[in-house]
Length: 462
View 1 (cartoon, rainbow, N blue to C red):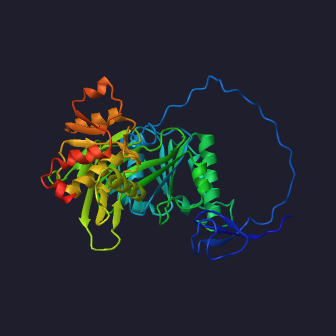
View 2: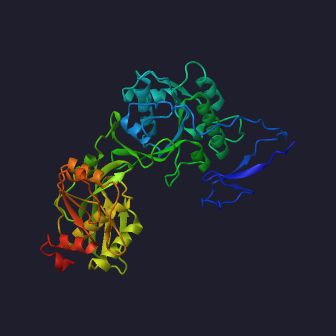
């Protein structure tokens, strides 16, 4: 018989230590190591494996049809709907609207005739009913329960008609007899997720696991849970804004990088079919330092406003503050503007913001950010019907980017008439028929000269 022993596991990253210590050596977090039992005494038995039949790559099996919930933004992020037998992990900050989104998706799917089970480990049944009543979803045939024992949940789901969708809210509250640790520990989260994953693969039911997030926005618990599931979704938002974004960081059955945009209303989350109009709403087109960026979020084109403020400073070291943009890319753009654009920015504070709370992570936002910086420095107001996209190299050249046609069509749909793009960008005839006046730009020197000509006192300020 093997003796029971204690192990010390970090509750943030899942690393195992031989003794307790205040700081985890793997992730660097403090006071996250907890003592757990390895499972008690077990008998060591040597068993011989059973040979199984191997098959080739070719076969007549066809993939099962996806399960469409009816919430278009949700289905877009999952790749067109749920794949039967898949397991998804949904993470988000407390109060962001995860439970609201899931109860709306469950109600929409249940009204289509599917069996949907919603298991809440954090709230009582009465609390979930209050939320459903507030959202006008009380009449949806969703089967509801409040439980935390994994074995009881699986036995309940196995009775009657096969469940199409099972929601577990949340995985940190689940408890299984296979692990002796307390609920919420790394061992319990891993064992509970493994049991639910095995049920999904054998029964064909789709399971959505709700996960807590850490201070830096990552899904709490061991990273092995993210490797076990088929898709990892993040529900993001800001308390200062009324919209929420559902983003897929991992998807075995679809593309990653897709986002679904929702607007928080008094009746729950409303789908936003045209996010570009939402992000551009209320912008001041007559103020300098604002440029519209034609970006891409996954396979969806999206227009956002990039705002810049360049002001003289009395400090020895000027400030460089960004919101929604990469700090390192801003430093590179400023260096290129000084070296190849002839601008003097060393004695100016620079503030850059992506309006609406969205993040502009792709390199194609370099040209729009540079245009906003030049506009703020020179006082030139950019045309309100002009969009920008292009990548800036260290030599000052503006490089082409992908999906130029989709960016142009999205800008034309929202009433834009001009587009500043790289000179080497390949544009086919169909994209030229979008109706925009294309203005190729070869380098940042040409960009600075073009913007400076529209300001009377641009040269004096620059």
